[in-house]
Image (cartoon, rainbow over all chains, first blue to last red; front, side):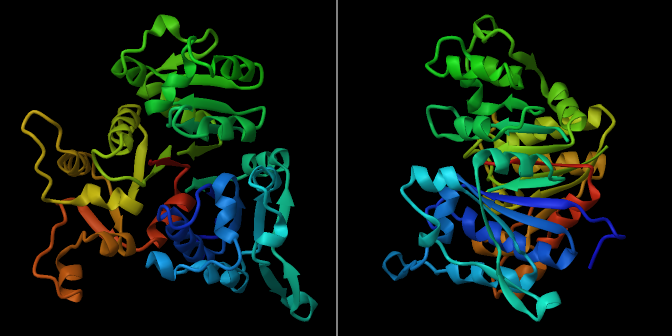
Length: 138
Length: 102
Length: 130
């Protein structure tokens, strides 16, 4: 569905660790709903938000639902612009290989699987943010 | 496109002030509201960071939040503009978009 | 301009809802239209009918309700966030087998699509939260 053809650049900025607060989960829920509106959607993971994409999350011990597999479904919803702040990874002693590989299938290239992840510097992310029409930060 | 960034946490509480400043593009403005107004006082260890940021961005602080916390308007870092809620509204409409650092 | 407001924190715990109220009043005073106020995360708790603060203090839920009535503002509470936190209207209470509803007058419960729509239709979307 699209609102009379209006297409805006929506960016969802994720800055918090998962599970300590509900922001990671409820932000993801907004992103998935936005997919139905044919908007130009990007996700940014910066500060502690980079932890949301960690592989091997096991939540049995804390008695909370593990929602990390939902990120892998983003590609199916045509959400394929995912920006990860490299400096935030470096500050935390993490590398891109610690994070889930998120992909989407390009139907124009015989459904070839392509990476949705863009590892960017803070300066690059700043520029991308400043080009957005609507920014929601969680 | 110009963006208004709002920050609402004290710089002593978390890194939102620092994160915002590091992510701000040069044509942006930063508005400190709620507990974040502490950032713009001359006396804190963050004063240098704010003074340095004034070279790149316009910086504002919400007057009712300063007054609520007993912070003297005379001790606000020079160059920071003190505004009310009407000014807050104006800033949101004068910039192309708004990002909140919580 | 048409302004969309997103409130992500509950009343009293944090200044978010108070700041949003002041902002909205100032915006209306300046002749802007409030397209929608959307309550998400703990912000849904602003919609409780049962808040009973001390007599000499503000009742945030009622302030939103009164503002909405005076200026015809659309106050929307996210259904998923509301269900998690126990904010229910009559329909939701029945659907979920609860013995009562607790939503304040002037608030309506709806889906996240209303937030996205506000982002699309409003000229600006401003977030108030913790």
